[in-house]
Image 1 (cartoon, rainbow, N blue to C red):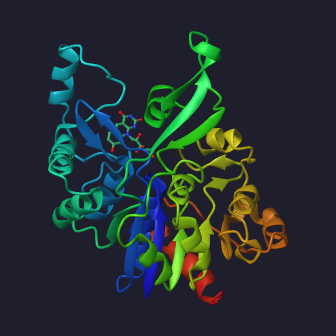
Image 2 (image 1 turned 45 degrees about the vertical axis):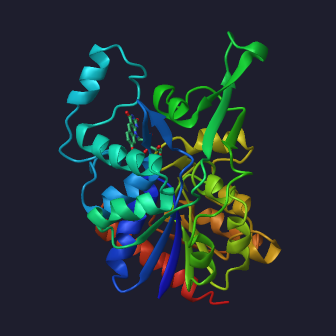
Length: 325
Ligand code: FO1
């Protein structure tokens, strides 16, 4: 069975670990979000690609869901001693090696897809990890700034997420460079040749949304012969982790399991979804999702370990199998 998955960071990676556990023989292609990427101290950092690679490769810091296990911060401390800015985004010594290799290869002219393949040759994630694009796309968030011209300024996604903890209201979320970007090699083919396409509980705006902002990817999803099933990132009105509610508000979408499904839209009405999983606590929202033309089931969505993630992955594939187009 060929499964294509659009994945952001921690939620996507944990779902993928369950999917691999539940369907070890499946051929899984992951289309990873690269709009979180940031250049720091001259190094190119790809948080969502690295989270998938480290989580599936067995090297992730399990509690954080990002960065490396057994990490030290000697380099970061030395940079701080030199008063190098910024200090709000901390790179561990082991993690820095990944960014050195990536930056060296990018500087040598290799596209990000080739770099990702090379890094995965070490980590062996057991899935094909594809960046959404080889071109640079960066999410910027427009927030209030009394000192700025017009009272607003755009900050890099990581500054909004990590330094500001997504506290300020976001007026707009802009995927800078998306219009000029193209799907990376293999991305469209992974979607059009899949037997099942899954949207894990990644952030609908700054992860799934930015992947879909790459021209050609949303169309490939709509035209895919495979059923498309998504998993709600919102449970009982709140994001399971992170600040999805803040960025959903920025695009005028209510923080509910049904509202996110309606935002993605039903495939029969030109949208993306054939099926949608909501948490058992959101059972009352199943009807609203069905009214939008999307098949819906309420199942446990919390992934507390590999076993619960595997159960969720089985639920998603099971729902998709019943929807074979
Ligand atoms: N998140 C934080 O909250 N603080 C950090 O210092 C931080 C460093 C960091 C370094 C590498 C990396 O791959 C991820 C890192 N993250 C950090 C998480 C990152 O902001 C998120 O993984 C995604 O960008 C959001 O999904």
